[in-house]
Amino acid sequence: MGEKIVDGKNEGYLNRNYSFILITSRAITKQIKDILPELEEKVKYDIAERIVEVLREEIYPPESELRRDFLNSVKEARSRVKKGKAKAYKYEEFRKRFSDG
Image (cartoon, rainbow, N blue to C red; front, side, top):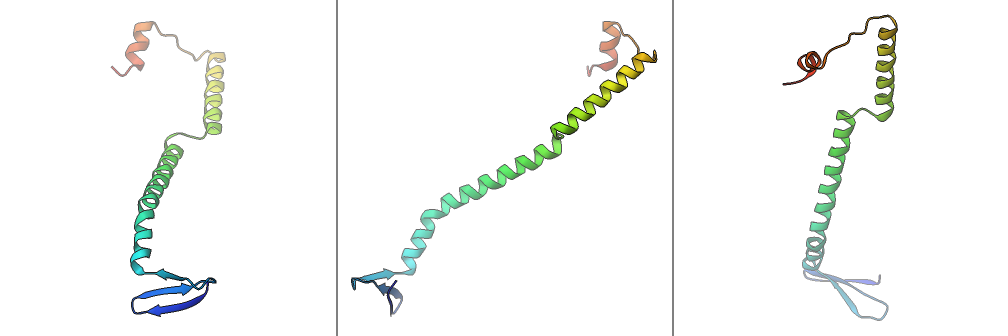
């Protein structure tokens, strides 16, 4: 970068063309303040994305598990029907027994 020069609060470097590049704490602070909103948004987005991912994993079973559970329930239902343990309902009976309302 060049020769470092310190003058009171200011600090800088002489580059190859002997022009002085001034680095002040104010300039650095301004640069940080300029990029800070973008960084904050990126962090918020990443956190929100991870929360959604964790919720999906907890609430919805993986597709492979869902299929296995579904297939097992279908096999059990077929087995009950073959053994004569299935029950038939009329529409009103079914609605009363299985509906929420």
